[in-house]
Length: 559
Image (tube, rainbow, N blue to C red; front, side, top):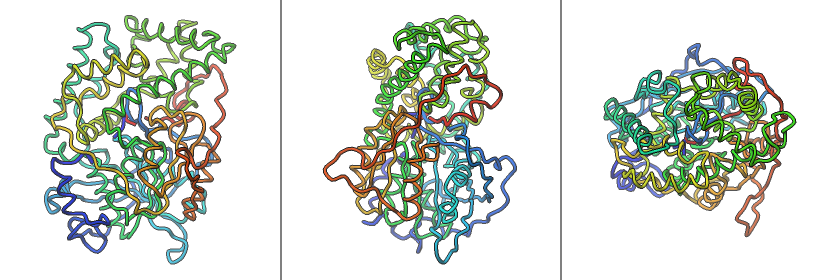
């Protein structure tokens, strides 16, 4: 998925020894935290680079599994006042007094009375794996209703490996390794396929050479234990949590390990806990292709604007013809077919980007003008040091969390099969995750997610979400009997706090009073529904610096 604690070998047995029936670590302190006693956090003024209020979410993605959303929708842009701190946690929770690493945190303090309406800490995570979370804390504080935000201390954190936490992973020089145009994600022959395989090996080797000491402990389970260390350092008996995309899986693992530590739990755009991780990527191939076809149909509906064909089939022919042409003649010498995949996969996360994608598509095909396409690539898809750090952690977590096929023959056969039905994403997705076939650390055993020992849980899911297909939310609902599922129309990834007023009302009611949706007895579907947001208005959008970032709520699960 472009997505998501892998566990150290044998840690499942260790957990059985450390964790009692309620998920409390044996030998832990009075807060239930397993590890050295925590000193109170020292909250300080944040560094200047962390003071922007524009954050966003992450999700599971196409050619880039779960990428950070560039920005949220227009609206109330309150500037939250934040503080920052650092927390030392064990690299290996089997050796709590051993080597330590540092997590970067931020906090937007609630203003409600501490002896009355205050509800403690609300931790947030944007997804990935690889999303840093500090910008999301600012975003959530600005977007929640003021009376709800006032009742929580909203806590963002950069998970282990993600800058500005230390160490921050990097496995290659992105300026050289990802210099555009890259080799085509869809190989035309064996020689081109071997180039892609060689790059996957090179990336995996780069991570192993630099991070052999760190990779065994880069897992979702350890990140969940880091969250409990944050809880203990905050002095909280319980925490609330809002997670998007891969963040839903992280939240589910935390709730499974520490159910007695959960006050509120919101999982938005839900990862399938049964698909960790190879199978989830195969499923994602099909859901991304479906959402891409939604975009092509929208372009056809607006042929008066884009003039690329009046049917989905005609527009699809134009799109794949464009992609084929870029193989030999990259747009502006920069955007080849792989860069095109990266740009247009963003449209599967949010239809707010569709007018920009339509403009880039039309001006290139009809006018031979690559400028809009090139600008979109630089704004939305170029891989810089921050993106490469996110990708390194994405792979580190997912490759370690669970077993992946180690035979490339299996990858090739499965990808070719998926490509016949889902050509938009099958090969780009395989290439994105291919380093896991050669990863220096073998995958472990995922946490068996699920528990009935939780307060009410709120799940939120769009019906046609590409990054986290709808079926995953249904499975998560069955694994958490206290959960209720709110479904929205459309396919935007990251439903709440993104412009859907109905979903935002349900979220606010739940956070405010733990008000749960009524259970629809006997149903396997949603407990309540919200309409999706209206489709965007077609226009030949101009792309100025920062334009898509202010108009799109884009993310990616898995990158």
